[in-house]
Image (cartoon, rainbow, N blue to C red; front, top):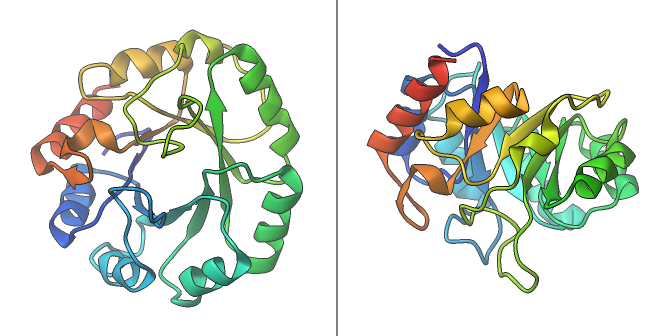
Length: 214
């Protein structure tokens, strides 16, 4: 088991949920966003989450969600956290956290140091900040595109909130990413796929093994 937290995101089958758990992931993620090739419905999330033991964190990834959508997801009782991956303001993040009673992660799209600096506005509103690569203007997805940013931008980051790293990671570069950034939580999706939305058991196992060497 790695001393670093590992989230395998975009899971959609019992087999890959089982692989993530067996490989040592601490968190599993389910994408509830219709435009994504990783989209799963609320009832599917309930079923998939049931394949993971209680100590594994179950995170739903949503983009600018309505309260109605969140109510449907949270109502099933399977989730342990919500990850907001849209343009949610600090005020909206705080409101979601207060209303639904779950820890809330906020993804921060990064291209420059200014993007990282902007994350300070979410301190106190979000329980965890997730630094992810900024997608091109007009892109259909806000993440999960295999893009990375300059990890040196995170070096020596002093922010009074837990944070993690995502974007463009793979078993080949994750050790370098951890060493450069100092991240204590690593989040991967497309880097453990054989095709968009199709997770690879072998890649999940290889990724978690690489992280465990840190």
